[in-house]
Amino acid sequence: MEKGVRGFAVKIPVKFFEILWPICTALVLILRASGAGAEERHGIAMYGPPALPPDFVSLPYVNADAAKGGSIVLGNTGGFNSLNPFVLKGTVPWQLSVFTHESLMGRSQDEPFALYGLLAESVETTEDRSWVEFTLRPDTRFSDGSPVTVEDVIWSYEVLGTEGHPRYHALWAQIESIEAVGPRSVRLTFSSDNRELALLAGLRPILKKAQWADKSFADAPLSEIPIGSGPYTITDFEAGRFVQLQRNPDYWGTDVPVRRGTHNLNAIRLDFYADADVLLEAFKAGAVSAVREFNVETWNSQYNFPRIETGEVIKTEIPHQKPSGMTGFAMNTRRPPFDDWRIREALLQAFNFEYINDTLTGGAQSRITSYFSNSVLAMQEGPASGRVAELLAPFAEDLLPKTLDGYTLPQSDGSLRNRKGLRRATLLLKEAGWAADEGVLRNADGTAFEMEILLPQGSTEYRAIADIYIQTLERLGIAATVSLVDDAQFTSRTGNFDFDLAYYRRALSLSPGTEQRLYWGSASADEPGSRNLMGVKSTAVDAMIDEMLRAETPDDFRAATRALDRVMTAGRYVIPFWQFTSGRIAHVAQMRHPGTWPIYGDGPNYMPEVWWWED
Image 1 (tube, helix red, strand yellow):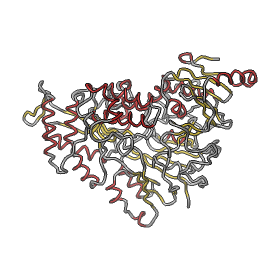
Image 2 (cartoon, one colour):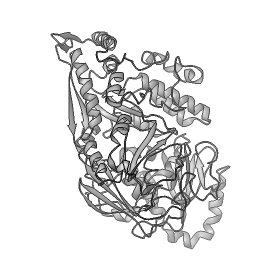
Image 3 (cartoon, one colour):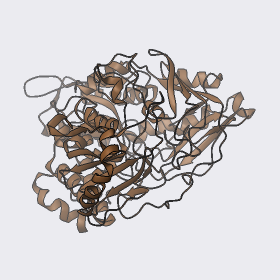
Image 4 (cartoon, one colour):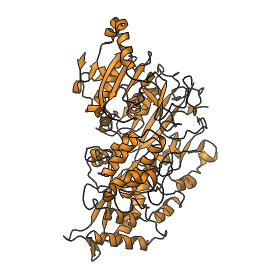
């Protein structure tokens, strides 16, 4: 047995089990008996059993008999300089990991948190979820035809947890041991009391160990494309211009239930454009097969071009039940004056959402009101009560004003001047030590209030929001500028926290869990590349995340999430924009979809995953 990092078992030769398996069987059965209530299952859910039975044929929202064939072109804005989506280095096309790599288990987009066997044929765990065991399917293969082994699985967890992107580190830190317990079985034992870990372990991408035997995983060049077991492989690319993906004709998992009826297109090309406007024009001209539109006003007013009139292009709207998540300008609380909640509240008061929304969307899109708004997990209006109040009571003295009483975002009368909001902002700025001097806002040291709004290149809509906002800030004496940078610079600057305000988008699910620590946990606030862009450091936030992870019933889970939502919203960390209550996709008529919407609606696991081509 070879030892890995921290003494973990990372390699047990398969031959060992083939020779001694009859002897080992009895021992394995004894060890398994120590986990009362454990048994092999086809799937796993956060609470109770998964909805689909062991003999399910396909996911409920797919066409199991969808035809294979056709090719499409999708457009991205910006560029890319890496094809390794599993490390911190570089900017990667966001779709890659979905198309090219797989995990032991696969998600159903029709259940809040349920997983079914993908690379693994079965999962086994105890009631307390202190360990989980996966057994690989015997026919799993990487795209180069080599088998996926237990050794690959163990190595993948280790390398991702130590050299991979920081988002993988938290799980690794909570794995007490990982070891092979059979020719095709691996067991992970956890050091933390967290029911979600057994599920998260099933979602780690599995990589080919042999590929990296004499190469740096974390610092690989663009040309070193990670080998995966997914339905597609990268067959061609040009840095910053395009990526060509081809469906693997020998893909091993075509008939696996979570894969049946999915990944039907023969080829997918990702073309990159300078900004959204150029991308839309390319779509109108027929150079792109489908686009997602997030602005209702644009959807209603600009998608009436000739190809739509002739039926060559179809507009499809897809409802969902997901939380709103958070989209807006994140304020960097690591640097003054944004570390003062009064400054952040003043900037919120000055942001005239009603006027901006009317100007840019015709008032058609409602505002995000909290991180989990538009869902059952959202904080409730008014004072905290019941279990939520109980959870927050120990932190009452440290919570920001109105957290317990009920915080709501400022509202204007919709006029351009927003006098009431500016008066409130002025009072808050004065309270924080800032006052106007000949039209320039200064603090006691005479330093002028200057700030930068950082945006990725191609953010046409968000640039328009910032331009309107800047005009209002000028009336307060604040000198604000907009910096548009390419994707690589945006990733580098936000990853190193080199910004005042920056565009921010954090999608959230109906099954929030351990990732919340990465999004706004104190431990991740100062880690380079952190997803905690705002720099949230709150004992109450940390405690509510812990309560979520310890919850054993849906009611306790919902209360903890609502309490977290309340603390985060009252933290005034982000200036929110509008939410997206449905997906909008314009696409060529040959692209077909099942017409059955999962609760999560659109996403990389819906379009193009379950679509097909029909001439």
